[in-house]
Length: 386
Ligand code: GLV
Image (cartoon, rainbow, N blue to C red):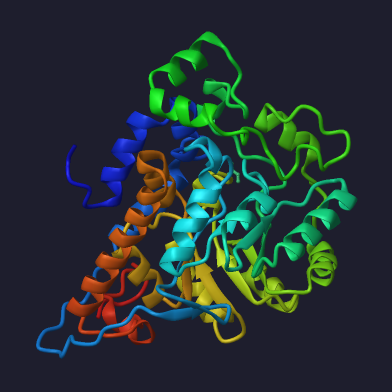
């Protein structure tokens, strides 16, 4: 096997080891995938300022996200169906993140449940909430996250309706997978995945199955989301959720200055600038391109995080330099998980840490707090070049 040196190496390996329908689920965006691509491409347009003859000893990546100490400001994003990239995927990724000293965020649409993840971790993980029509179920879900001592609730605002992802529809995506000839073939070509999967009982949406009333068929993601997710969700609901939860709250899915201002008014602890990895509104701008204006508008009133398109430690550095206090990675850790299980998630984090550390040093900086605009050439075309 080739040496694994960058996230793309993990991606190539995951593509071989994970059945196509689940690899595609992670590696997809809505419609033409233009926003999915823009998230990555716009990072590449930002250039770093090389500085020399600066003492580079005693560097540190330690910092804080919503007041929580992190070994580097990179949390694992909530990602749906993580336990289909690898058996027990959420439990393994949570353990890898805990050992690494970064937050893991469990998705509502996970395979392993809140309780499953709590049973294999010692420190608080974060929980991402989707709001469904059945409010009793939502209150119960929040209480389960509280009982598991989750350290933050990440409330997703941009998926009341599922964006159309062509790959999922073509692959007939479901969990547990439907046993069509095509799906069986996809699974048979990944024997290690099948063996691991046969040894776990965690193969459906365990946060939901057996907990939500009248939810019998969880199989087709798009149909199920359409019937259960609450399209009426609005800013007043945030207040209700904040009250029941009572802990740290991160609002995920902010892409617009006006929404960022509304988010500040809710008293949330942070906003996560996100376009859902390009999986929702195709044609929306990349997250990194809107970060500066959101920071300008609300940066002194609320902590700002960013996800979308981060594939290297350099991307993390760029987001921090443009004013994010923390970042989230989704696909990079999923590729690690699909490629190698828990050690693959650790590998993804190590790759990003190494790239962040070396790039920071070569920009002449020694700690996260030193990463400001000063390490970048201004990439916004409307602004004069430095
Ligand atoms: C769920 O969060 C998805 O994007 O599929």
